[in-house]
View (cartoon, rainbow, N blue to C red):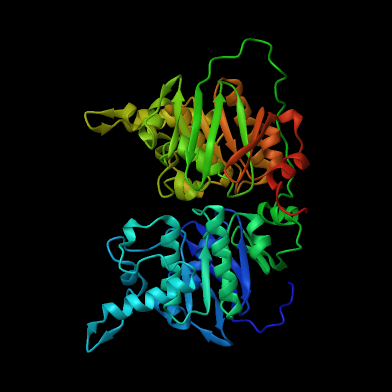
Length: 508
């Protein structure tokens, strides 16, 4: 760990936190100095959100200690954290749209005399905070519901500064900002740290970390795999390797050679798909039997594209077509009826009913097939689920076992079996081998390739570049929400892809 000459303002030691079936934090250490911008990095699911919720008093840790300004503390509630001087700006800003800027800024600690709120005093104080933040044009009396995303973020910062704040946690603060607004955000952060306020900064954008950060802590699978790295000089490839932990062997099935037969008609066509602040102008033609990979750093828009194609997010522009027919935007049922299936990144949280059986997890998207006069034909449901899972060699072969008792690889097979039973024609795979051991990875790779050979179309997202190159027929490289390169996988290698995804960042 790189030493910092200043005594720490915050020290978190051995923090653990578990939820049913998930160990979210496993002995995490974090140290932040006054006036420092300390960057917290990690992929989705690494434990960043849980750690900041512990720091904000929203979660109580199962173990570990927190020392604040040299004194042990217990952060029993969000209000206790605020009283100490810890403010959190969540990615989803928790503002009340029906209240004014001033009312949001001083919500819960309004200036009052003899029990009466002094609204004018609140507006005056809010105006001073907005001026400090470089936005004197925001009217303290205006309703928050009428503000832009950037203005709402400024209001959230003003609310933090309305307390005697000493540490501000910023969770993806630049996600919805344009470049000029990001520059203003960085100016605000510089002013805050010059006054001795510490900032814990969370972002997927590694180029921002170099611009603004002092030190970096990297989380992976609930553990701090690196602490206190110098933000400006640590090679980007080293940071990416720490985030992905890519030090495992890969065993990919042989890909078929170039097919000289006429290409089949596209099953999935994406035209100009975009979501403001996440990705822009995404185009794709995907044919039966083809695997297309999306490569890019975390935060490049990969998962957001998959979820928008699937209807879990509503696009701000563009459309998705299956067999040439447009899908209703933002509708998962429409996507499923058209033959799309998603194996999500957070398998346990988003893709499985952990307390239910393997059978029910496989059949849940096809229950209408087994319904008779409002009753489920259990025998037919079990038989269909067993056929689907046996085709994927799911082990152990106990259909009534709770799915939470399976290994990561077999849980992923249960998700795949669900979509095969449904008759899925386009499979969207997001981080398909996360939490899967080495041997099971090879099995999953073989399953995906076999399904493609049988005519399934696959759109694959993975943080592990060798995985994308080893499975995909064609690769689209993403950077900051845009496709910057497209090529057959055989024409790319890992170094070329990393150069493309990091282009524009300082040389590593």
